Length: 341
Image (tube, rainbow, N blue to C red; front, side, top):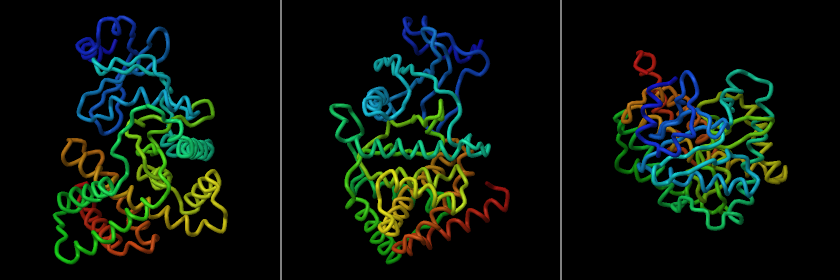
């Protein structure tokens, strides 16, 4: 019996819920993500379940159950919610297992290609039908507007450049960079608004019964579907060849209905969305490793910076960001060579 997990849950759960839970033998707690939520594997009323205990550090944590119900209504696979006690901040949901896209790709499982196609198809369904089907479902209302895009790039500049590598960008260099990145945001804001997952990466998509199933969607908000597509295809957790990324890009375009003749221009938008997403990801890896006591995330900073450099160069409109990513990548490589990573 996982006694520590049981002791913790006994202090958190209302008696009625605790009486219906049987924790899994062995390691009941699931190590997942960079946030403050805790997850435990159990059986609830005889069904395999995952218990999520969350706090009020992020308002989005309380939105999970409602969004899961919305996803079911629009045909996007997600865990069933067995119980949500908002006062106790406890969520009990269907256990969809441990096999995610990261596991498939890392193990070179031949199913990885079908799994990624299924994930992209599900994302397109969300992008296409999400806003119309949302109704009164509460989501994060601070969507991807100019202020939110600025928050993401400032998060990157503060944590990756200033805090991690003591690189302060000032004067005209900062003015030119800010002008360039504001232009990047303006390009993304000019696209049709869509509902997006927002953290659409390989560890947030499970593979079960031949279908991709989404988790960790509580940060869902209005943005552009290209952000989700770029999040998955340039995911720093997963290595792809250029040919494999191109194939996934074509899959997404096919699901969206982008004609062949328009794909070169669509690819520039894709690279811009990837640059925006990778700035956020880089900022997160440095923040989590340096300020939240989670050093394992530092290992993903270098691949994230490498991808950021590549997409900034490929976009053709982000020379200052490309130079900054190149410099930060060089500094992070030197740190790794000294055994500090």
